[in-house]
Image (cartoon, rainbow, N blue to C red):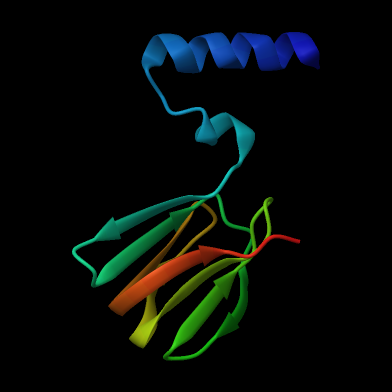
Amino acid sequence: MKEIRTVAQRILTCADFPGEILTGVPVVELKGGTEAVVLNHRGVIAYDESQVRIASVLGPVIVVGTGLRIRRMNRERIVLNGKILRVELGLC
């Protein structure tokens, strides 16, 4: 298993991919304060118009704002729209 991980790390390094892809660490992209994209998630824990709690390997990713809605969701990413005020990482 260690050998497979080492080979994968070499490939990611050579291809200039971020390490988060291999480790499963959540990645949050904010776009203009009105859109958030969360990668490497493990599903939605709770959701309403003021807060979205998303499970990750590090604990919940919490997006706080107004008028929040889940625009798209699949295994790789969750796309949120609304006025985004802050993003927090809740540690377990």
